[in-house]
Length: 322
Figure 1 (cartoon, rainbow, N blue to C red):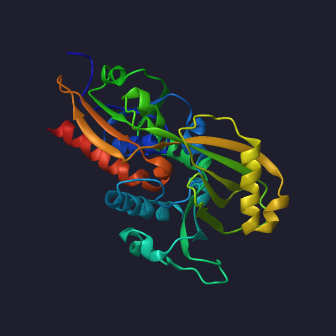
Figure 2: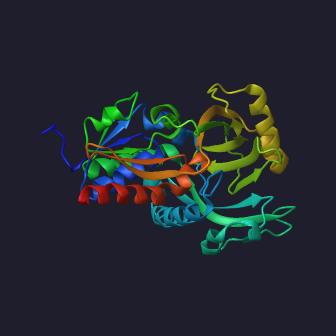
C-alpha cells in the first residue's frame, strides 16, 4: 500500500476554475484537497471583471456549451446576490453583431441588437451575470467546506508532487501550467483595471479595441465601478502602469462622461492564462494514477467555470470507476 486512497483527489489551483471543480468533486462524494499557491483573493480570478461572456477562448463549439451550462448556474445564484455575489445586469456589448456570435447566443434570453439610442454602431444588448469576485470566491470556499473539502497553502514544482499524495490530481493551475506541466503554449495576457467610485452607472458596457491590445469596459460592482482594460500579450508585469490607467479612464469616459471625474479607489493587474485551446484531458500514468487537466481558459474562466468543472469531474470519476 502507498498510503493513498482511490477516493482522494487533489485539485491544484485555487482560482475560480479550481474551486468550482473541487466543489463538484466534493459534492460527488470525493475527498478533496485544493492546493493553493496563493489565496483565492490573490489569484487572477479575483482581478477579473467577471462579466459572463465568452471572450478570448477556444475552441468555439465546446466553449458555447460550457458557457451555457455555467450561465444556467449563475442565473440560479443571482437570486441570492448578497450571499453569492452574482447579479443579472443589463448592458451593451459594443461593436458586435448578433449574427457574428456563436450558436450559444440563440440560447441567451433577451439577447438582441442595440437601438441607436443605446449604442451608436453595431452592438448587442444583453442581461447576463455580473459577478463580484471577492464575494463569489468566498462563497465557493464555503460551499467546498460544507461538502467536506479543504484548501491547503501548498505549492508544487511538478505535478508529480500531488500525484505522490493522491491517486487522482486535477490540474487547474491556470497561468502556472506553463511551468508546472510544463506547457509552453500557455501565454500570459496582461489585463489592467482601474477601480473608481461609481458616479451612478447602473449598466455595463464592453467593446474590444481594433488592435486587440486594448478594450473599453465598465462594470458596476457593489461599492465601485470597474474600468478596463488591456490585453497585452506575453507581458508578465503585475505593476499597474499609470499611463495605461489614464488611457483606460479616458476611453471609458468617452462612453460615459461622468466617469471622468470619478475618484480612483485602486488599480489592479491580472494575467489571463491564454492557450490556443482549453485543455480538458485525462492522462493515465503507468502506475495507475490519474491526472486530469483543466486549464487554458484565457479571459473567460468565470464564463465557462461550471461547464468545464463538470467535464473535468466526469473524467476524474470515470477513471476512479474503471
